[in-house]
Every structure is written in structure tokens, then in C-alpha cells.
Amino acid sequence: MKSVPLVLVVFVLLSYVPPVRSGLNIYIRQIFDSCWLFKGACKEECDRDQEEIFNILCDTKFLCCIDRKDMPTLFVK
Image (cartoon, rainbow, N blue to C red; front, side):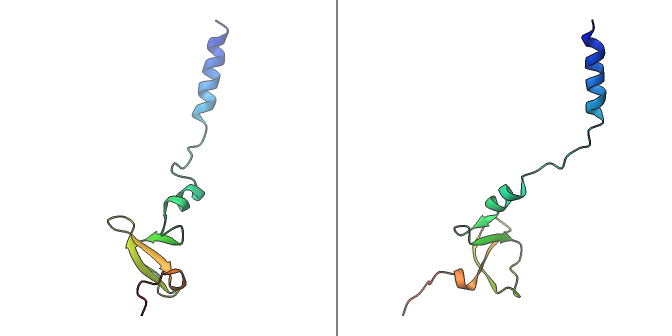
């Protein structure tokens, strides 16, 4: 019988806890959003100012953008 008021107090205190943003941790998200052996990043558009180029697709709407220096040599003469 003494535990009933304690349980009510705990429920009242838990109701005042502010909601936390759900989703992946920033470090975990960075790992999952990377591509091309962790050298690229999945984005909707590649930045031309940073000289990023499109290499492969990450998903149906995201591009794998990598730096030109990290781009592998595709053809050798």
C-alpha cells in the first residue's frame, strides 16, 4: 500500500521529462551516410565549389560525392 504513492510520484515526474530528439547519433549517421570506402558522402547534389564529383548512387535519390583527388583512376593509357 505504501508503494502506490511512490509509483504515482514516479509517473508524475516521468511525465515532466522533455522529449528527446529521436534518430541516429551524429557519429553513427556519418558512418551510414558515407560511401566509397568512407571517402565520399551521400548527398542530393555535389558541391562544385569543393570540386566534388558524382561517382556512384547511394540510394535511389542520393549521389555519392567524392573529391577529385580521391577518385580512382578509371582508364590508363
